[in-house]
Length: 237
Image (cartoon, rainbow, N blue to C red):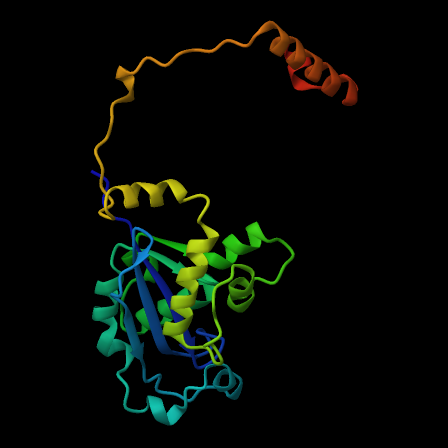
């Protein structure tokens, strides 16, 4: 049986851009995917960072310092967050940024680095740069390109951004994971199926016909001529 694939799409908002410079997490939003389907089992916290946000950061997320005063500190909810994330594949846009903040928060409470708690970390920004080189690959740009509705996003918010990123990720990987989708759907979404021993089947071997072989040799000759006689198969022959 194949175990269900659990993925968590994660986003944070912070007081600024530098975890090493003393900036802290003020919001964390997580969306669960099971076999690439949203489960509704999400996790969301506003956090008291014990410092004020930079003005530039305030313009991005719009979360006031006053609003965060009575919210729990990271240390108070760390165990709940880690238990939720334990052993899952974590999907983050620009993972280096969020992970640096999570590592710093964990360091402050004497915990190991973030990677120690999860199965793997997937960076959708790196994926997008590989798929769309030279283009803008912000979350908003990807939403536009992949036709994900982000009309409700006027300010950055961790839970909203995680939900948008889940849709973006599914669209980014739709081709490579199509087989997984079909398997899960055929199995009623359970993510498990019976393995079939293919060794008991005798597959016919279809040999190329004479005209096909001649056409193949002609194509190889053309390629060899175009390369000035430097094709690898000629030198090996």
